[in-house]
Amino acid sequence: MREILVVWLLFLSICTSAQYYSSGSDPARLSWQQVKTPVVQLVFEESMQKEALRLAAFMDSVAPHIAGTLNHRPKRISLLLHNHSAYSNGFVSWAPKRSEFFTMPSQDLQSTDWLEHLAIHEYRHVVQIDKLNQGFTKWLSYLIGQQATGGVLGLYLPMWFLEGDAVIAETTLTQSGRGRSYAFNNELKAQLLSRGAFSYDKAYLGSYRDFVPDYYKMGYLLTAKPASSMVLSYGKTPFNMWAETVGT
Image 1 (cartoon, one colour):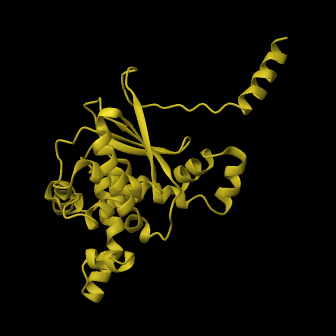
Image 2 (cartoon, rainbow, N blue to C red; image 1 turned 180 degrees about the vertical axis):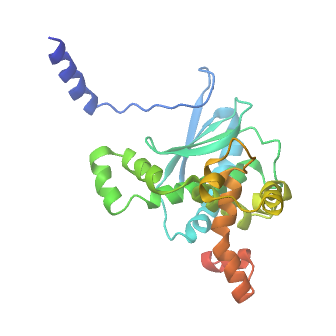
Image 3 (cartoon, rainbow, N blue to C red; image 1 turned 90 degrees about the vertical axis):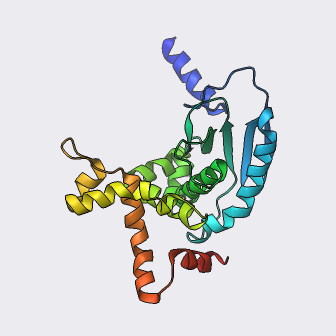
């Protein structure tokens, strides 16, 4: 009887469509609304309506420029705004495919509006990950769903590449961005001047003996290196090259 019940539950799960989440502390009393654009399905609490509509319009306008250098236009993604939290962050996750923004501004905020900063940085992650869903990965996704894209991402793309590339996006498409910040770059500069360059494994995985800057700093300089080489060769700034690529 137990085996029959297990088999019945397995077949029942095929027709379910429930989602799950692992973040947010929003009160159950909140009334949620949504707005759909070609780029995003934005889910927000009703008191955030004005900011949500502004964010949706901004994402529609900036999405082609964020995606331009990867020559890929993702399908619409769901975006959830958490405005009942003191946590400051944003993330993109697959399985289920979504993005979530925590609207409390960070204490080390740049001059760029916080939600616009998150939109540029996190949507670049959307483009990066969605572009993986082709070839073998796409065929694999027919068998195991969105977990296929997430699995390939974890196996083949290091975090320093993902975050470094996103920092380049926020730096080139705004008048601020962490790439222009001394506070963002000073740790790695101090290490290179005082201790020299660490091995790849130590620079990426960290050390119990020495202070090692995180992979955001490492990734920004590694992914920006090709642009720096072009600057030396052609006398163009990274912003000029990005603008020419995306047609701005």
